[in-house]
Image (tube, rainbow, N blue to C red):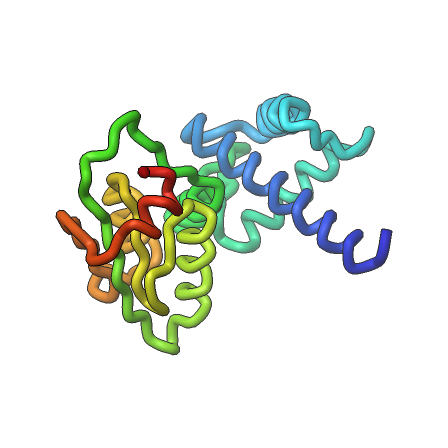
Length: 188
């Protein structure tokens, strides 16, 4: 394994650990310091990412880093998510988000058009990545299409990324020459 692959693997494990810690604290609302490690270790075990016998030390270190980043606060022996922590956790959850497909297609196309300024290039890249991962199809550079309802995830994107005015969600009854789209989504 090369150094780059090793660093990438460590980064993924670190992000997974931070996601588990934030998720655990979010689920509990507020969590005592003594309860963070056992809950996180249990979640790590279920995901198959137990680091090693020093796991409590890793968890404590990651929790401290989350506090330093302003994603959690530690007060009177308890961890609690900040607004920024909740926002980051939602983004991480969205990055794993899969759109649900109903049994039957309602014959409508969902078209997402966006115009996000160069000042928000990082946000634009994150949104593009989410669109790819969710299975949307790129019609043109800033135009994506999907055959099923995805208004909820678009609403979350608009609020969490602060791009409400730059993203437009359209429900269309038909799209010209859509045979290739129907084929792409398995709707023939």
